[in-house]
Image (cartoon, rainbow, N blue to C red; front, side):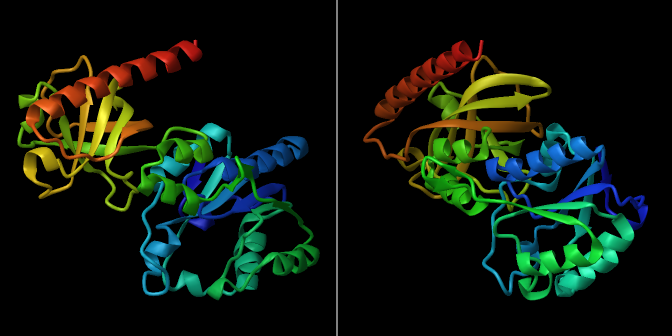
Length: 316
């Protein structure tokens, strides 16, 4: 997959199937759009091209929109596009100035004249350009004028819930990881750097790696204990993820992000872990004693191992 940050590097071709959007999460609704792009590209022997933005528009327009936490970093999005089979991505540098681009100018001066287009695939709620003035009717007019076809992919529902990045963020922050994963179509994950901690968990018999998220603007799920899988140095490990304030041990002074990797006992300060969230075992809870906490963690580990065993058996 070719990634362009400069539009002048893209060779113009009228035989180009395009989709445009932020694609945060590259979730199951986004994948329906990508699927349609690829079907058209394969049928017409054309190239597939995604136009997306870096940084996310809401990170730039903070004075106009609420501050946002993201589901995917730019690198994660690109990886998901590549896995899907997209040929090219134009990564638009989103700025305050770019946000003022006239909707017609965007298509006429950039897409039609610079990239070339035969077909455009968009989501049902797609708007674009200055003040989000461009909509489906604008696109129909542009399509007729510049001779490209427009396909609108309607909303996707799973268990009665319309798939959207907003819904997924909400589920994650509520700790409903299973609902979030169902809408994503894969297990949510984040990257963290291993930092030196206070080693309290080691005293309990469950040593953990304390993590600092690589991306500060990434959504971190709600407090609790999660069944997890952890990638480190190319290897996968089973484990438990804890997010919370450790009220039993530290009286809730600071939120911590800790992962207990099973069958792993190396010192890896400064190392990078990728942690996938599979299931939430329980929420945050304050125990009456350290002994009660140890008993609960032992139970959590037993439940984690059983859940992972079932998953691995089903995937054989």
